[in-house]
Length: 520
Image (cartoon, rainbow, N blue to C red):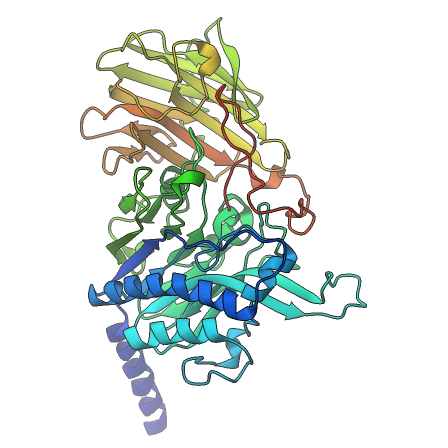
């Protein structure tokens, strides 16, 4: 009995210690980095030259990591490709790669620099975390030797991976993630299966993935739904695509739709339309940055709930089709027309009047809009659009989208083209759809590419509505759905892509047409 009581007391004491040690909130930092890029070359540079370039970029990251730590940040996220850029073949990337071990080896590179061979980048990142007592996520390249006689081994005898590493406050390697969904990255290989990488801290449970991964079920959704992470760390090299896929627009919407914290660090390169970082909570953006005017990097901070699910502000679960499937269809306009966003054929109907109720349908998706403008600008046209189908040239990802958006001009053929300014304000709007998926991400993007924190909300019945007075001029208000079970089963692109460069992306042209999403 005495022993039993002692064990019980010990267990309770241990629980109290854990509760006391756990933090209700933490300070997060993300850094949008302007890279020093390598010279384009068709032959590999030397190890010394590769390290020289990476150290120049790490010098910049070091300054920002130190500043973040001084400001009280407990964790910082740096961008994808932040050490060396993206214009590579398999051969030219190789001098920039290191062999990154499994975190289970219990390694502090800063203290044992020679344990795993040539690892100068890992040693320096580890020391940055240790010397500043801050968790650091960085993106770099991993190489793994393989048997050249094995048919799965690439030419050169190595698998090469786009990789995230995380070091804790002691400099210990606590997480390693290999990107699964590559996007025009011929220098890297696709792992055998999506990796589900998490790590625990005194301020919550964290998950990791990279850039294009966010548009797929695994690993992104699985980390939130099955592994119950509190916060996602998300380095990216995201090229903004209007009207639905600017970085700040979609990433803030994903955090709301998945009801999880999302820390986003984007690369900054205005020539490639790369900008947009932020710290996003389930209920609203905490802080964000979008800058297409300068080439300057940006460090962001915010206090974040360590365990958002137990926060009083945590949003309720949404039934995304509850309202739309129970109401009578609003009048369907006879002059509905087809238009394109990217390569996707939307059905559109124009918002002719200052106020109204409209429905537009495509296949099994009907989108409903109630709205009232403060005043309809004569030189601006808005439409309600619906799309249900596989997206883009590859026809791989199944989207369901309801969107109210501004057309580029009064010519209806420009509806869906990129536009970044607007003048029309809405006194109210309510957007809903008969979605067949539970994964829907609510977007509101304002003129000059701004978000609208605190000015809209999603009701439990699936309506996206404005609140707290009239809106600022709106570019688009959208419900972006992903029906993962209807995706095609093709393997993510890696070495099979054109072995030219990562910049084999397509860009906007004057008539507003453009190819698939341009992101890293």
